[in-house]
Length: 122
Ligand SMILES: O=C(O)CCC(=O)C(=O)O
Ligand SMILES: [Fe+2]
Image 1 (cartoon, protein in one colour):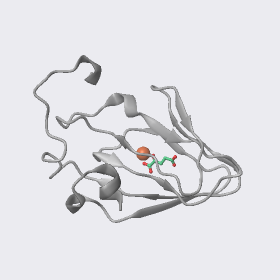
Image 2 (image 1 turned 45 degrees about the vertical axis):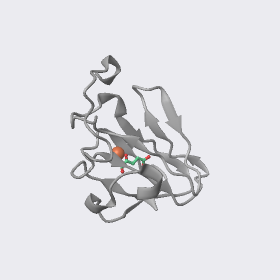
Image 3 (image 1 turned 120 degrees about the vertical axis):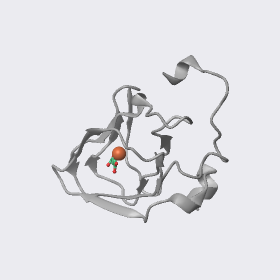
Image 4 (image 1 turned 90 degrees about the vertical axis):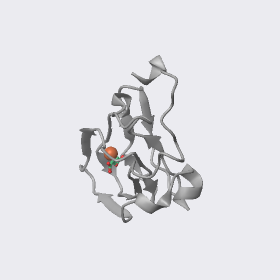
C-alpha cells in the first residue's frame, strides 16, 4: 500500500514500526537518515502530539487514518535540512503511529538523480 502511495520501490523498506506516546511524551527535533518515512496516525489525539517542522513553519495535527509523507534525503542522497522535525508532547489522550521507512537504496530508478541543479535543493 505504501509503495503505491509513494511511487517508491518497496524492496528496501524496514519493518513497520509502531510507536506510542502517553501524555507528556514527545520526540525531540531530529533529522531522519531514511530516504522517507510515512508515519500513519492510528488514533486521534485529544490534545497535543502535533508533528512540527520548524524550518518549514509547519505543524500537523494527528488525525486517525491520515499519513504524513516527506523526503528526508534529496535525490543525490544528501540530507534535506529543511526536514528537521519532532513530535510535540501529548497533552491529553494517546498518540499511536505506524512508521514505514524507505531506504534510498534501489530508489534510483523511481526517483533518479537529476542532472539539473536546483538552487531550492540547498
Ligand atoms: O511522532 C511524530 O510526530 C514524529 C515521529 C518521528 O519523527 C519519527 O518516528 O521519526
Ligand atoms: Fe522522524
